[in-house]
Length: 401
Image (cartoon, rainbow, N blue to C red; front, side, top):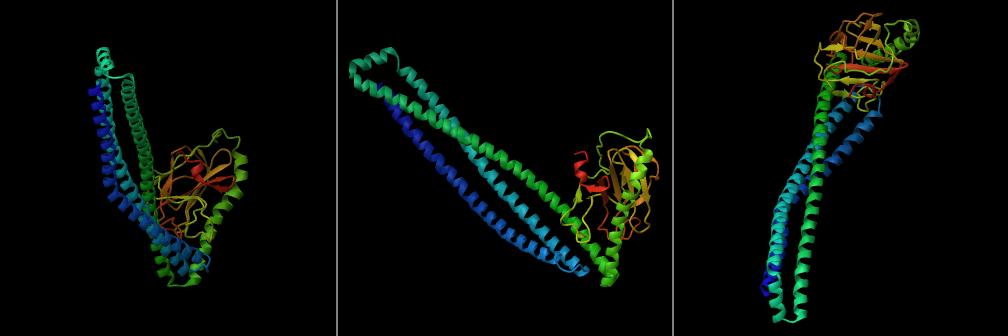
């Protein structure tokens, strides 16, 4: 039994030293990473202040007079803000990457120490089993008094309990660290997607800015001509609304009994292969928002001349060839739903006919100065609208996700 007590004391000292060594090692590894994380947090804070100032500038410009110069100033500030957003997002990605490295180091250390502690605990239990047989207890009983035996037995029990508690605590800390790592990893993935979208937005903003600069060159800074183009943009938007409201009711009544007209729930397929949205429904950053709300979505990464497909079966209400103005197609579907496809460089559908899902109805456009683009477009893309009883609604509520 005396031998057991010596072993227990040695294990206790080693166990305590091991805990202290673990803490020292973890602290050393964490210090340098913590310093880098603190620096990243400061960079993010500084960038957020710049972003807030940029937003204030944009807000002031948006409330000012509607002129070409102001529109370009707004776009310049939006481009600058978007750059800051990209940089801020990258800094957040860098910060999380450092935190993941820190968590990986902690988990690795915890794995080593959990394994070591479990081995020590197993050795202790085996040693107690070897020493704690009847002959050892008998010899100890003859050699020592009863109170000494009880004290030694208690010391063994206490040490075993302490070791079990510590191993369990370390395992819980490891599980918490692993859960936090999974959470941070998911956040990192989201930030990378956000950065990708910001870079797409930047391309769109640059295209818009280039288009506005070209417009300025064409008008030679003539606000009269610019205001005329704004008026034509309003006319384009109003013409679609007028076509739908004036024709839809009477046409739907006429074709309601036609077996070819689809019925039932309407689920829309994407009209082009791209899934990149450069301008959302009622986008707050839409460059012409002061003229009108953006009534649909703009689908980018759509090269000039990309095939455009019918999003669902329906009846072709109108095919409008605007020449070098705005060209579009309107299709009626079931349940009062209609779809609009705009900035088409070529038209393939025919009015007063039926189309099936995925039928090619035209080809995308949007390149400034090309057929069907209209006077104030921002580059190649497809403008896509969904209307319910003639009222624009968010296409993302109907498109297959």
